[in-house]
Length: 265
Length: 327
Image (cartoon, rainbow over all chains, first blue to last red):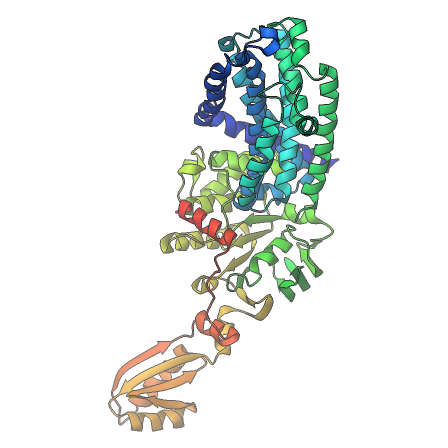
């Protein structure tokens, strides 16, 4: 019982530290907006004319891209904050946590909670740009979006912890970036609808957890902005199906991440 | 009960034996030094004692708890200061201490008093609310020591506590460590590869290639290599040597124009030398010089080499980068 209490304290400390660091670092919050803004307005506006056939001509490409950019912010923040474990373990505060009388399970769960929360904040900041791309959101939609972002963030942070638990140096990080993160982002339906794509891409996209994060986020975001029939043409699964699949992936990744984190020396 | 009891401890990484059947006890309240070159097994031993690594064989008890079977009790009863900084430098000194208190289950009321105490001990009371980023390397070390003490540990582990600090700061850290022993009645286990710092320890274990090659007090270790060297010049060297041989019953050699005596306790033999040579008819003494053997001499005597320089692998390189930032 006392151990459980200590572990909960441990989870809280690790979570609180991540949140505190995020809130304190205003420069990082502002600079983290740079890339999404670039994608959204330069990339989005530039491709808009060429993509005019999207959604039978009733869907602006920038609006289509917007949920993808939210997911991008969530994905990158999640994985980065999880992978920071590698650096932190060798030269930072994590070492202090690892020798404290709290279990490894608590450390891993705390890190997943912290990374998810920070990623949720980051996604929420992007969400503030909605009016600029002509997307209008009700309070109800925002609440649902928060839940979806959190689920996506938790999935991707678990994935990040899973990678980081076995990584010993920051050299491996660039490889994760090039061979895992970027493909995950491009094959997630963030940039283009995953309808009528080649079979190989379809298979990879179906195996990509991010696909099930972006699909419902897009449906909820655009719900009120475009006709139901148009939405039908770009979505992959009903929201409930997406959420169910994502939840299963999240739980499996988290269990494996905690297990591997416990086994490392 | 000893603070630490290690029996036949072995740690292997694959084929490499980092710690090779070592045994030693650390008494309560002593400063125990682990001296050895980089890669000798010092940090590995500390990591086993603080339950970060599991031993391949052998046993280790810390404060009576087995490191393998009661890791949480061990962790709760020890404080640790790592070789590499483990503070969060985006947080304030106080926040770092608060997080530590929560991780170790220090109650809120106890924390209020204890954090003031430990900050005062290391002379950082006025910087409690500053971001750690603004601290110098020495201040960070001191804060880490304060943090390590926060939960009333009975043993404090210091892994190379002065690594990468300038000589003046190193001396300061040592002043704090010694003051700490007076005030807190705590056992201190430290590793170092600075020979002059090992002198501060009550007892030293010299470790090389994973084995303990000697364990004794600093002066005991030095006595092992034949004691002090006294050199003197006189107006009549041959006459002086004759008298010293008969009166002191010790080896007397001539090295150039200096008489050399090798004696266990040089400071006690000097008055006898003066008396002998001062007896009528007096022989004029031109100069007299006493040299104690250093731990350097001991180390070379025991291991056949000076303390090795670190090999630059990736981790070592990263560590060096961090050190630059810490200054």
